[in-house]
Every structure is written in C-alpha cells, then in structure tokens.
Image 1 (spheres, one colour):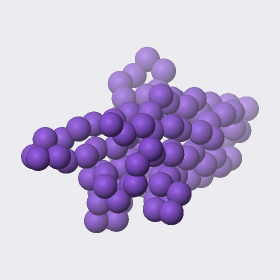
Image 2 (cartoon, helix red, strand yellow):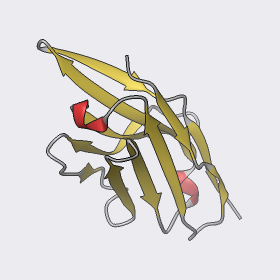
Image 3 (cartoon, rainbow, N blue to C red):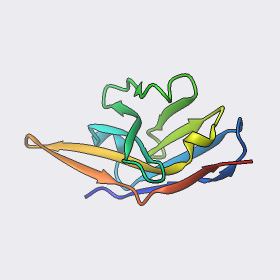
Length: 119
C-alpha cells in the first residue's frame, strides 16, 4: 500500500506560478511510475505528466514548456512546478503512482489539491 499526500494548491493569478508537492509513504525508488493528473471542472481526469522509474519525463501537450516534474529521492517527494498559469489550468490536481509486483500493476492516488487560476 502506498499513501500519497499532495500539498501546495491554492489561488493564483493568470501568468503566475505554483508548486505542488506529493509526499509518498514509501521510497519512490520502488515506484514504477510517479506523476500528476488533473480534473478540470465538469471534465474527465487527464494526464499532466509522469516520470517512469528510468527518471525520464513526459508531459501532455498543454503542460510542455510550462510544467516540470521533479523527484526528490531523499524526501520521497514528487513535485510539479507550474509556470505561466492560465484560467484553463484550474482543476483538482492528483498525484499518481504505480507499482509492479509479480506482473500486476497497482495504482495509487492522492486525495487531490485544488488549483484555481483567476484574477
């Protein structure tokens, strides 16, 4: 069982920046994938970006060039730095992780943190 706890959400003006942090209850070395999803109001949850065990990163088109995922293996945290925020970035942001045990993938989610981009 992996517990994920997000922090850092809030209200920010358009063009501003925000940093979200996700604390994992286990070493992130043991996680096959860590990343972030978001769910805008009235829409389905969508991928923001993720980082596989290899340490690489991939992002959805809307996040490229503006959002950055970073891993801190000492603190077992996965952060999402968001710059040049737009009102369309308003959403609940969720931390996500996967483990692979005996050929079975297990998926874990945080409780979510609200990000509101508004003037």
